[in-house]
Image 1 (spheres, helix red, strand yellow):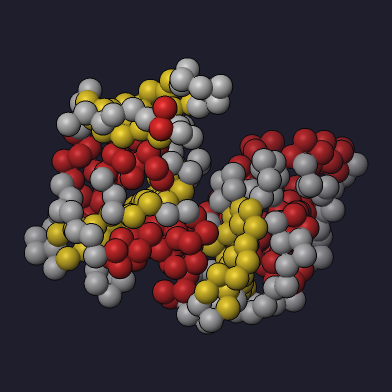
Image 2: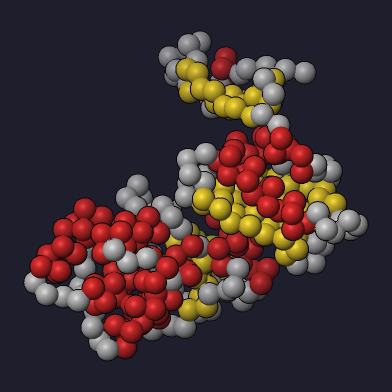
Length: 321
């Protein structure tokens, strides 16, 4: 049976799924990128091979990549499809929730809102350079409070139900940390501060990414932060709408680009032994015109397989045959 691999390579985490012809997820894995997208993908492929290798009659025939390192990993894996995150997340979500109108997505450093009508993206927005209100923001605050970030959700729910929510200024990470310390000094409990941080993520998101957007149900919340039940609860309290989190909410980008790979009809049998191949990237500055474009080059076992970054033909680097 033909199957399709989708990989979402983010700045904080990398996600991958293998699906069948009916978009059923046959294997999946999630791991930290740790500043090394090639290494993260190799680890994920090794894990997927363990899950998928038992299915002897199944073959991966097409690959799609999305996320911040989609071009790099797409080149390495000879992907059939390389797509932006907005498209991938929308396709993945509508494949499960065809009536979705609003998609909230909050990851490790990025967040986005996607508005959908009749299965088509009609508007979207992404966060600015500031990581306030993302997963990395919550993780840094959890370290300051000496509380595991995985425990934030349950702690926040308890505080919300007791109406013990500290008002944390979270439009900026620096200000939030300062405010958090101040609240502790004047006697606010850690539980109320955790609830305040979860609410601050939501208000920051809506005032920044969601500014000026009309939010309609059904609403699907995804990305790594969607696993935090405290943030989900805060979204429902602030918006007044029901918010749904799918069990595979962290995999929607990977699922979407896997579906796009399937629909591309461009088949290339994939060999999982790719994790044993040596890949490296090099950067250089083109000196052939005043643009001085930064060219990224990808090598497979010492051989150049792809390059990009040039804005004119003068910066083109011939691929080795």
